[in-house]
Image 1 (cartoon, rainbow, N blue to C red):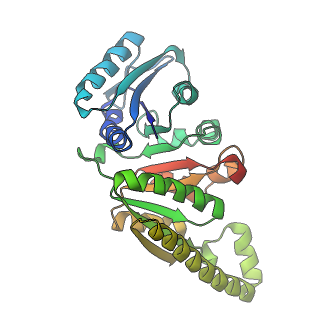
Image 2: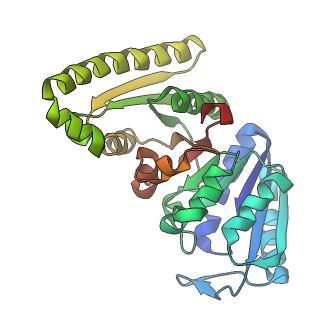
Image 3: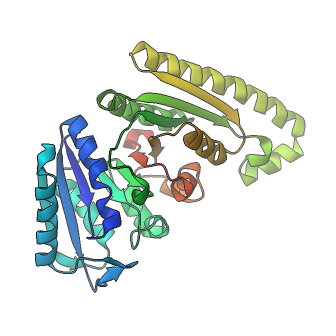
Length: 301
């Protein structure tokens, strides 16, 4: 990972991701580009905070931030997209390839809030079309001045999702000197999706047997994944439970004070499954811990 993209709109809330981005850049010896997209008919303020409206204003603003953080030793570049766009998220996407970035860090606040991010085509453009990981900082105002990534939580499950998430976990754990917490949750019959819940009610004994088999398989998979990581020198803990995955993952993230959660999401295909009330979408909607969204490769989708 050599180049991080940090979109900024001029608000104090968005600026709070800067220490986060600079910390990651230092650990990975990466460059940072501060980006502002001129928004068509942009308001002067958003939720009481200033909102950049002109190219000159944006250039001066980003330049002042680059100068302010020059002492970090991180190479900081600035880029202002001159053409005003109706949708700033579209502008962020278009610069992914133009600037050859490896990671996009977004502060979810104000006009770029979670509901807007995950509404219809916006979500499809960000996740279905993106080939780069996206780090979502849900509550930037809660970040400490000194950022650390000492504990990374990785929900495991489906093979493709698990491998992609574990690949990212290995990439981040080394430079960040982080411990990996692997979580596996098996749904109980009452937390299954509607179609499976109906089948379970019609064939309760079969459903019970399948539930027991799935528990045994899941615990074995979790142990195998942990042992493989330990053999590579990583510090790993495991957490296993049954029930609603979102509720349990949130509980563990809060209790263990996770610094980052890594989730793999669908890439070019199958995005509707991710957007429509999936575990990943529900976690993004409700969990305050920063979340790294890793797109699945084409062969995995």
